[in-house]
Length: 382
Image (cartoon, rainbow, N blue to C red; front, side, top):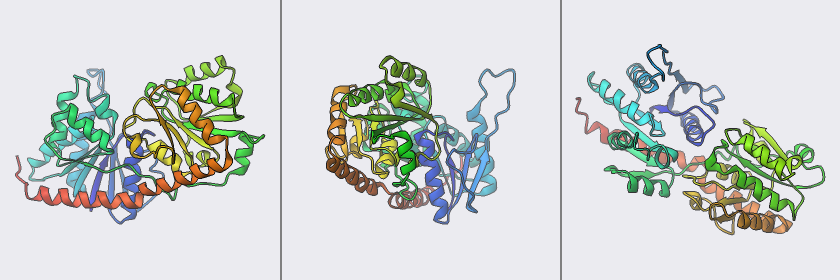
């Protein structure tokens, strides 16, 4: 198949999933065309089956905000007409689904029918999509898609509860590439971070308020009172400066390392002992899954789709949002006994195997074929 993929090219979850899916589809022999405003962060190798089409937005004094959605729609028309794609897969509803609908209508006037699948990832529904400014467009765009998927049962339920959706939403969970995300022996790095054998806790995110970075730090502070430990914080964003200030206030700044954005996240995860994710909401919890693939038990909240991947008391523990005391107590429980820690690590890796990319990609391939066949029967140019 010739598959078009529209996504945000950043380190965020939707962009990561879209890029990793495209790379895996290319490995399966499909021709994959990425269409976005810059090269996706994880599109980091050459393949004869991978193509990138940049969306450029012209700047005019008339526009305070350049109309990216229109530029994307025009680019989709161009790529579809000249590359003759079989299907377009857009990740994140806003504005990709509406841009795809506009492109689809333009192509129909040329007698070209473009089947579109929209994958919902989380904040496009739970946060931005609920904004009254966008809700009508989000609802319409989802309903006009030929196929719709969500990354968790919880997200599917929330979408159907809040929006008037007349389409079936297929749940296809996020996945992890176990060839990349696996334990990497990095003893020299571990000794450099924890020279006295301290336990290493780690968190990775885009440092937005929803990730509750202060809770990460307060959990670590409580753990530190019982167990010698270090904290690694991977990522960057608006909450970094307040986080640094809190570490100074708690007098733990020497035990915390702010590592910024990192490409080889798996190498850092491999030196850690425990993963912290106290998020206010997570549609799936991809970063926790990647940590589990690197043999890390997880201390998380029970928000959103997290309970669909974390096995309580087996791969880690879940607590109510904001319950720092419980999260710290669970972290100490795992870390204080080496045999118990090893058991949790083994369980985490075993659970990650359930979401191996090799199991999920065939589900997408089958769904592409299903949507394409259904679309062929409905080809009525407007």
